[in-house]
Amino acid sequence: MAYGGYNNEGGGGGGGGGGFNVGGSQQGSSQAGGGSKYNDDTLRPVTIKQLLECKEPYPGADLMLDGQSITQITLVGQVRSVQPQTTNITYRIDDGTGLTDVKKWVDAEKADTEGANTFAPDTYVRVFGRLSSFNGKRHVGAHFIRAVEDFNEVNYHLLEATYVHLYLTKGPPTTGDGAAAGGGAGGAGDSMFVDNGAGGAGGVPARVLSCSKGAQNMFSFLHNSPGGNEGLNLAQISNGTGMTTREIINASDELLGQGAIYTTIDDETWAVLDY
Image (cartoon, rainbow, N blue to C red; front, side, top):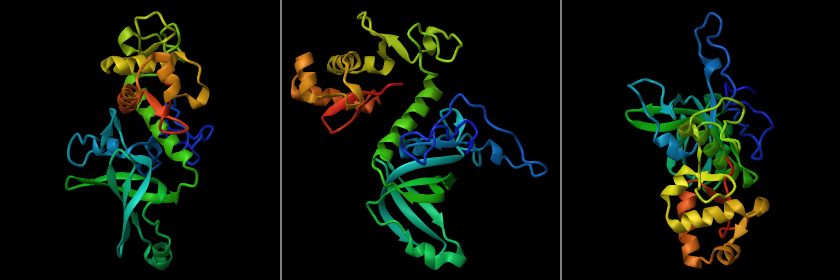
């Protein structure tokens, strides 16, 4: 399925979410004779925090995120409450970044069937739908909701949403010589990375430089140490950096908040988020 710049190529590790072909071009324009813009719709992975922070240029305008219109979206979260009503089922969804209402409209002819197939609280679900705003309050009108069967999909979705946000706000990843991957040289201000000033391999994300010295030390150690997909655990980082357990925990909280690292096999094992 082509989503207009967001294409399901390879399927990704999460399944069902598609892969974001950020370099792709949006397809088509209006449908013949109808003036519809469905061909220009994009499907974008988002967090609830991003939805709550979308900008509305003027009343009735498309909501904007990272300078682009938000049309079709997909999110993954946990059901906190369910409110069945005559015309719709309203789910309160929490993805760890915020909460939002997701409304699944009920087909009157299938009301009994759809009402029986509601998702119970604490169930993880993936939602496909459209963000709507009415009287200043936002909700997601769901086209389709399904249960998440593999928890890896939750982590995959958050990483995918992070990657898309960084691509749209920072530009494509850079190669070793600083040129944007895929061609097209940009100025130093266009790069997502900056030299760490220590002569080490590669650089560090600019936002890490705003973190504490401990967080920078931890990031540099993770960045320059071979840890495979599982990353490095607290004991390895402590032995390699001389940092105390408390210093590492505080540093990890900073780096997680900046989206520079992520937890892997447990809450005390981290790896660098490779952009």
